[in-house]
Amino acid sequence: MTQLILQSVVSGLLVGGMYGLVALGLALAFGVLKVLNVAHGELLMLGGYASFFAFTFWGIDPFLSMPVVFIAMFAFGAILYLTLFRYVTRTEIHTRIKNSLLISFGLVLVLQSMAVRFFTADERTISTAYSSDAFTIGLVRVPVVRLAGLAVAVIAALFLEWLLSSTRFGRALRATSEDWTRAALTGVDVKRVYLVAFAISAALAAVAGSLISIGYSVSPNIGLGWTLKALIVVVLAGLGSMRGIIVAGLFLGLMESLAAVWLGGQYREVAALVLFLVVLSFRPQGFFGRAHA
Amino acid sequence: MLEVDGLEVAYGDLQVVWGVSFKVSESSIVAILGPNGAGKTTTLLALMGLLPVKAGSASFKNNSLIGVPTHQMVNLGLVMIPEERAAFSSLTVEENLELGAYTPRARPRQRETMAEVWETFPRLAERRSQKAGTLSGGERQMLAIGKALMARPELLILDEPSLGLAPIVVEKSFNIITEIRDRGVSVLMVEQHLEMALQVADHAYILEMGSMVTDGTSSELAADPRVREAYLSL
Image (cartoon, rainbow over all chains, first blue to last red; front, side, top):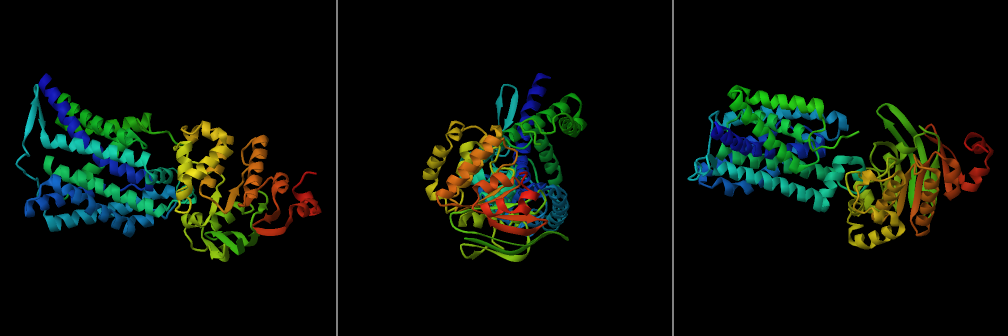
């Protein structure tokens, strides 16, 4: 029993790192542009396929293709902003959420259908030589690729924190998320900030997708599930701390995993949603968020 | 240096500014005065490109401002401190000042300007690593002005600088505004408090219901019986 619990703690934390990584991009777009992109998971799905095909056709290792996928999806995110989300950001702050929901839900349908048409509905996983490698600590088995996924998530969060706190552009991002009008009056090109923030958000989703195509699997309909998890993580953490997002992701993964062991596998999802409701009711600004007036 | 002619602004079908014209010349303080709801803030926001202009023209140093993005105006030296104070509460005092020098115009002289700001506002230097959200009203006002100075303005626009401040802080702010003018920066301010504004302004306009009703030098306006009756409780 002890071994089972320890093993599920470790598996929970490892999948939780992915939740955190997926949530980072969602939180960035939401915090800066005030848009809720429910197609975030579909961007992840595209990133997963990009790594999968790079591996299948050209034999490129997914960890090597990851930077290329990052750049490609940065560009795709910029295109999505210019063609779709730019129009949402022209509306009043408080109407952006509902407008972005409508637009991004449409995007979900388009990207999913296109994925089924071009990539087929089959589930795909990258099997490299090291895919099933694992090491054992005591009684617990740690799969190497999933551990690498967690490491990437932590690195991404630290990179974002550094960007936000120590660079000129990061200060402009924080100012814009606090109040875009005053940011513009300070001389910040708000449209450019929006473009870059959305592009980074998409690129982070794609990196998560690459990792998921190795440690887990990709198929055209995986998007919404990951978006939902990311949304729960953002609610748990609150906006304002990138490190907090990763911690909340780990916490969600852990809770799901323990619920599955103690209550049964069918309670995994229930645990996540109950956590979501409890936090929304008692601490709506999240664990690490600031309460806003 | 700033010329606004026949400016009209509407929120959808609701027009609130009807053909407003005014001028700000070099090294002077100009005040636009009028009661709450007269369209003062609307005029400024439209001027800065934050509200659509329905008709009229505006130019700064002979560059038309119509259709120019806000951040580019800041880079021209046209800097506005909005009513709710310009500082960002989640950034520290120092980060706010650094952000103030965001434009290519101000960036190369950031260090030098910041030293000047610390000197003008020693209080801010004491609080440099504190979040702006934790400052008092007066300190926030100083930070807002300091941050605007970081942009190396040629024309500083202030929306209701006296709003929500204790009389002593207002007096101090107006002293600083005069000092800024004496350094060669023009100032355009919008105010409800006529008495105080007329004490510092060189020229003033009175705006009512979205139209300019009169204008003149501060002493002319202070002596005008209609102005005295309507606004000054003398």
